[in-house]
Length: 492
Ligand code: SF4
Image 1 (cartoon, helix red, strand yellow):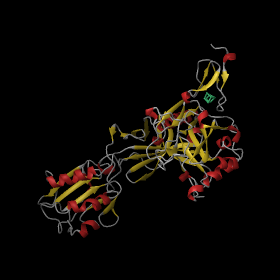
Image 2 (cartoon, protein in one colour):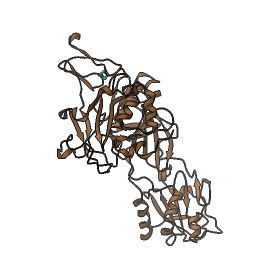
Image 3 (cartoon, helix red, strand yellow):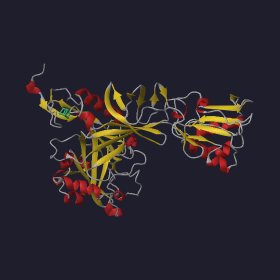
Image 4 (cartoon, helix red, strand yellow):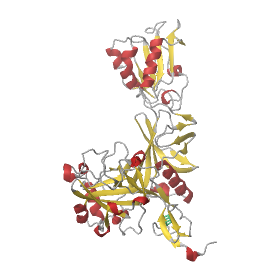
């Protein structure tokens, strides 16, 4: 048992851990090393060429900027590993300056403690994973819900202050842990009613043990529109089975314009416009996100005065993964037949046009609260400065989408951020990196902690982790991000 007198108090968050020599605090971010409180992860700097050992502090005064936003040679100090100051009125852990194309720029860097945060998850799949508003659970605890489906994707809203703080202690802890793992690109298994799903940023979802391969080509109607020309010469009718909008070639406008005659087909479900049917089956994990394994179950009897024996029909799902070729017998009943080569090729074309199915995880958090005090003594001026596009907000160097309206509510793709960007504190809350970049003159004007500014090259190089820039990410300090260069402000 350690002597409490040997412990040091961590003041980086409200938990105020007393940490014994050689031990880490409750969040595993801070430790007691020989009586010094140290941040265990290194400060992360984005460097254009981290693997070639180009000194990250040399030759980067900005005067050689070539206008390439993605691959500027300037290093950028992210907030990953920067630490947190608490209470909030203390200046942020790093406020660094560097000249950029002749302009003195300042970046204020801090690891924010976000009680108001969560993730939005996009899962590219047609499969039914739960109705809108269904509860998403991890270890039996509610951590979020299913929200409105998007085109070819199911969406989840996870975390948020209600789950972090408004439920039981276990609900808050499990929610925080799930968010942390998702944001750090780890796999998290969750359940939605009787569906099991594994979500990992940048990876295919695993639904009820099956790895999803393809995102659908489009809805059933869109698929008819796309491929009608490739079908009408080889088939009399095509049904693209989809949970939302099932398409029928002979009735669809695309078929009409190509001269496809009526086939007497009858589809169960609610007819919307010609060749487009809703609710042909229940949602599920079968064909096109329905619950069916036998596509013929969505057909009614063919109209005897229109249909004819030998009529050729393709039924295909929206990913092309399920398909069947049928011909009507003398009783006008569809019978499965070997699929002709050209029809098979068209089914493969549908699958070829599907993109790989992946999970996307976007962190969303509110930075319009007390952490602003680490940037300026007059917090509302930071909010205004962001709205006026005088201040550029990034998370781990990745561009943050700032929502219109009040506050500084940001959203960022975790795949654009350095690995291991996120931490947590057991309050519970997520710890996320956030950087505010602006001109030094603007920083002074908004009441910034100018006495705490230090030049970039004062940061000891051996205490940093250097990572390469993410693809397609703008340089946070580039002039094009700011209204003084572009005359464009953010939406109010
Ligand atoms: S939880 Fe972490 S940041 Fe908070 S006081 Fe403990 S060690 Fe410090």
